[in-house]
Length: 328
Image (cartoon, rainbow, N blue to C red; front, side, top):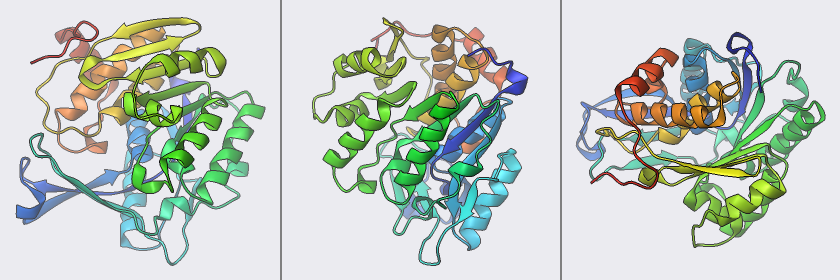
């Protein structure tokens, strides 16, 4: 994992959508009369984060042929995210729409995903991937929730494995997308064993394990049996990184949060950019944590993704908490 940053190239698989935020910040959706529109969806947010950090990135998704889909396509272009792997979904589908509040207290996010366009991936997309020189294939777990997206995503993983391209699985568990928690557990477990890096929070790893009792034990076991790296995130308690037979705990960068969403996408983008630039694992995790802190302190998600110099400046000006230390 020593590609020069100028040559970093990623493919991210998953959903893109339109996010609407009540204006001004702090306004409840039910009381709003004005909204700002931004690119949204975990995969699109990760891609935006990587693009902001100087990487070349393509998004594999499907968009509906309507104004919301065209809005997302225009936003992808504005971020410099490649659309060669973006297909047009069927006429009965719709690109996702989310209303999310820029407020921490009593925060509400509502997501409209009936007939979600991103599950309608064209079956030939994996065969169109250019794998030569690709730093990693990044899979968001929601892409595995329904067909035909699941089969297309698994085919993309198989092609990456054949080409010895690292596969990164962001568990990204959204219960409303899956037929059942059991289905999610079985698919996640099988896919994790085919991945090189698995990232998720404690609840997502519990789903992967098929239990309701979060524990880092399964992530520890998984890192010994399958992926080289598992990052087990615990919110304010930081994270535990299991890598190559060793484990290390890390804290967080305390900030005054504006909202509770976007941290995971920012973490992964900054972690990947640092790690695949040749950075040490611990430094990559710290940079991921710094980016997460920056994004939750800013309005929106995709537009809040930091530049590399912003992450560096933030780390120099702030101190990470000790692992497991919760700020009161």
